[in-house]
Image 1 (cartoon, one colour):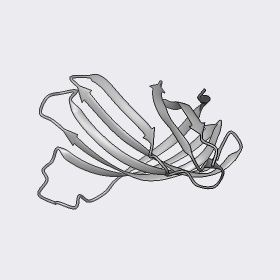
Image 2: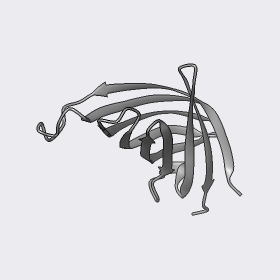
Image 3: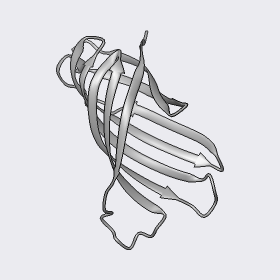
Amino acid sequence: MPTHATGTFEVKLLPQALANADAGPLMGRLSINKTFSGDLQATSQGEMLSAGTAVKGSAGYVAMECVTGTLRGKSGSFVLQHSGTMNRGAPQLTVSVVPDSGTGELLGLTGTLTIQIADGKHSYAMDYEIAPQ
């Protein structure tokens, strides 16, 4: 039975140079720095690649971020993998724990995380399990 964790986070996205300078104006690369509060007391650092289109409201992004801290009192780190699309304004986002990325007391962590943005504030809900090692 999964455990549920909730809270808020602050995020800073900083533009970075693309590895391929000829990729075009619709491509982007950003560094991610987050601070999580609530059941997840942690910080994260990561990288995001994005692509826009000529159609307003359509875009996509992928990202990887390493989260370090405590999850309901258990300390360690894990990696989150993001895959998001906007199809003419309709969002679809999947954020999953990378298998076998958990360390410390988070060894064996699996799960998914959802993100909500309301009035400019970010919150998360995470359903997870930690398999016995």
